[in-house]
Length: 597
Image 1 (cartoon, rainbow, N blue to C red):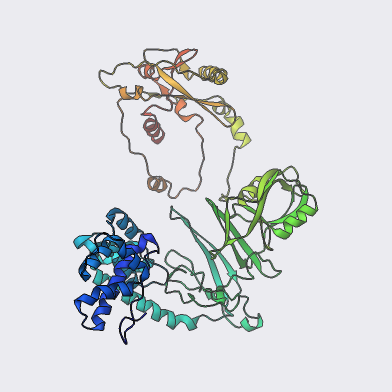
Image 2 (cartoon, rainbow, N blue to C red; image 1 turned 135 degrees about the vertical axis):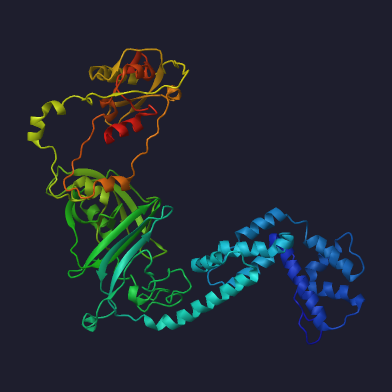
């Protein structure tokens, strides 16, 4: 439809589109129509209304005919259509929509600001439009280094922010073009696998040496390995293999490029992981890492020169081999191994088609295909007494089977710890020579602890709490044992209730609720030693002794005046402590003072 010779119209308006955007679309169409009127030249006032309805199309004409107050002039017609297409706006909702707008991939900051300005017209920000746009750009900026520049500058205007962004984005594009030719296939590298853990800022690296599969060994014979170090200040981009940026940054030279090896977008052939994940060759070993983090699992495989730790096991009655991986939190088998196990009639405790987890190859945004999981008994092939039950995840494809850290430790094939030179544990002759010191509870000689009471402190008597019948016999046995060890005795004026905590081994922990009684104790302050102070005192020492104070608080005797406040009530009567006990507000500080002395 053409409304003037030589000038195309703005096109009809669609009033039946998305209802949530009809107001914005009408505003844009009306702006285009007003520009069309200016470009068309002088138009008689009487023709503007007809031209408006003609260009808007039949749908708008039908709508206009139903409006109660249409008016005869152009301005009245526009006002009537505005009232229809632009109802009263909910500024709270529009501002919510504004806050949800984020910078899209490949979108420049200038384009991002334009989108924000369009939405800001519906938000009634008044004179705070630029301020809100600036805050939203900084908050939703995709480039972390650019966001850091914004924050370093402090308070910025939108124009200043755009100047910084344009310079940064231009430099990124220029750097990308300059470095595109730097990455060539057929190079060797010493790689590092890095993982950033969510929420707590911990980092670990697995270093291994790998040979790129893109060229023959003869082609790389005379080339020297290129070393890449992984540290806090020097990360490796898993798309291009270079440091100084992350894979999602626009400065990555691999972004948008197609791999010559796997034909996928973004990775260079130099660091392409196709053909390297979960592979084991005779000459090149592999370091496999699988880590479970909440519901997501990250699976890495980096080729290395060290031999694999392979262990022969029996899973559900079927003999097979696993690679022991101290960094793996899951046991993993591939499809072919699982099919082989089924042919040999593996005995499973349970199996499922889902795991509730997702398994990712390192550097991939696409999860590996998980076929299911199963639980079965596992034991060492030649040491059947070492057995446990374990969960296994089955993945599609071919690769080595991984034995996770927890299962490997349960089977005794993996032990993680620090080797101590010349360590001695429980020498029989020492225990025989000082036999009295290793029997019973023991008590520190010539020392009695005094708990200083507050002035005018009144005794607090609380009734005994009801205990389940299943715990009463255990509580009675615990009280009898404490009496035999000379830890508790008869009652006095104070009385606190007890709290019984069952232990995993079937025993119980008897605790006294001292919250009210502690209010009567005058607390003494003593600075607790720091790790730095302890290490300074141990500087130069060559021989270390590890002593475990059995029931440490109970080895410190209370004087007669301090015992009444420790009285506790049970279903068989009142008792009080003769030794220092857990729960007394002063216990830890007092024990520290005694140990330091």
